[in-house]
Image (cartoon, helix red, strand yellow):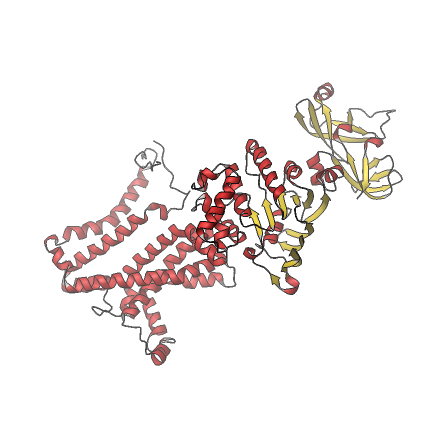
Length: 278
Length: 351
């Protein structure tokens, strides 16, 4: 079995100032976590965590973020395929449009969603009038807000994988008698599987942490729209100790996702970081 | 009942305009330099690319005919494609790879796998059925790619440089196996290659594709006996001169004059074999050779007991002399000399 030879890495040829600056960066990310752990009311942690508001928010977060991930996969994979494989006029513009929520302040996204899907929004008014469907301030609104900010992460990851994939595998499948759909299921999907998993995990993590768009579009109602990040923010005003415990739970989840993804999904295959020879 | 392809296509620098026919049981080798359009032509035949104009028919059924907006998708063409780098599906076993085509067309899994095992047995790879493609050697992967294509019983078999990725030793063995399979294949087969040895061993006919045009079709012997392109001449290792014949002299566009024995007038091609060229330092007087061209040594290649001397001049030539002669003359790059050839040693035929 080939093992990664991380332990054999030495710093003998790495400039000291690089190490120093990098160490500051690591510290910068580590300190907030250390601060939370330091201040956490460990003796009461379990009690805070199992409080009704906390459990409700946690459950709501889980349900909504998983729905958002599912919607991101259902709509995001075809979008990624289109962006990667079909040349059409305005493709760059479409890509930019679909990626915009990655750089947009989430609150702005929430406001925009409100004017699109709210009761007086361009689409929302008809949803209301014809289907009696109101999305703002509902759990469905939370899912939509989360999907809005999370889907681009999946699209970017899957599109990159599709671009990297040698199309002759798909060509071979077609000449062997496979339809486009069969080819996609049996050849393309397995090949981009790791990227799809990584993209889904990133989208899920983003949905789980969503705050701005959610509070703007869906509000902050315990039980229906109050997700974990909202609960943390609220608890900060009323019960800071509980806020710390909830924050730590979120950190633990995020950290677990990133560790599960590991480096190999962020660093492309065959493009491993240069290792310094001992 | 044949494969007919009239293919007109422009892609970037490539301007492809080709008309070929392959009959059942026949193997046509497409030979030509890189960028000539060989692979693009195969992709058109397979349906992986559409022609701009023209018409492709398989057994008189039009599979691509822009004039009537007919285009049959690759999966419905009954065309098997063996890719240069085999493109075996990495996440499937060897047997699953071979069974893929049958599975895709709806054959039940057990039956498809049984057929795949039969095919693998025929190429002596039965014990590797459960292995992954990464475990295969180049020759084995080539055989799996071949039977994967054959398992769907295609009417047309396309092979894109099937032996190019193999080392010399394996190549001969795989070539022999491939020949056996092609001989028993009843459909139409096209083989793209840049190796005349492959064409000789595997194909019934050879088509030379150069810069998007078929410049010559025939058996390999016919094609190499009378090259019609610089590519074939280089392949065979002869000097090809094109020009216009009048009154026993072939005049090239660069102004060189080649005295020939007897040939009808008009645009012609002439072959000057490297070993029929003599080299001398001083202008020969009273020689029987009718052709004396001045030139400069551009390059000298030693090949065992012989040396090939490339000569720049009005008529660029490659001459072949013995190493002994080379050393006696003490030839170096940049030396001025004269190349002489007897008119009767030059073969001339209409262009």
